[in-house]
Image 1: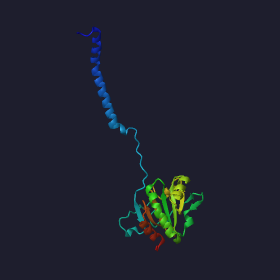
Image 2 (image 1 turned 180 degrees about the vertical axis):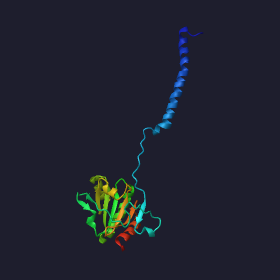
Image 3 (image 1 turned 30 degrees about the horizontal axis):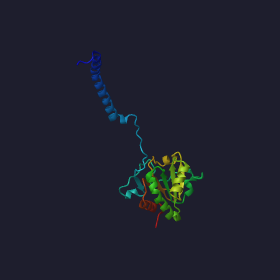
Image 4 (image 1 turned 60 degrees about the vertical axis):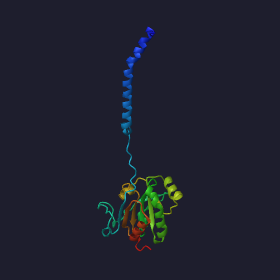
Length: 219
C-alpha cells in the first residue's frame, strides 16, 4: 500500500535538511576541539612566586674560601660598614641599628609567606638563646605585613624572643639590596662592619660559622 500523498513532502523535507545537520555537527565538534586545545591559554595571567629559595653566601675572607659567590662591588659586601636605619617594633617604638653599636647583630629579612624564612626561625632562636650573653642582637625585619600578622606568627605561633621590626615599605630591604630574595641575613660585628651575607635559609652550622667571624671566639 502506498503512503498517503500528504506524507511524502514531510519525508522529502527531512532528507533535504539531513546534510545540513551533519555539516553543523562537524562545525560544532571542530569548534569544541579548538577551544579544548587552545582555550586554556586565553586570558591566563602568569604569576611569579616570591623568590625565597635563591642561595648566595658571602662570609668574611671569601678570598680564602671556595664555592662562595662574591657580591658585585656596587652592593654591600663583607668589610663594608652596615647602613644605619630606623624602623618601629610591634609596640611602636623606634629602633635604630646604631642603638646596638658595640654588639654583634644579625639582620634577618623575612616574611610569613616565605617558607624557608619560617623554617630557619628556630635556628635563629637557638643562636639568640646561646649567644645572648655575648651581646648578640637579632633584628628580624618583616616585609610589608601587618603588625597583627607578625605578632601572631612571631610570638603566638613560634614563641620567638628576639626583636621583630616592621619594614612596611621595604625601604631597608632596598637599601641593603635584598631584592625580594627572602630570607636574607647580614651579620654585623661590634664595629658595625658586615662580616657575612647569606641569602637563603640558614642552617645551624652556617650560623655558627658566621658568628665565629662576627663575635670572634665563639665556644
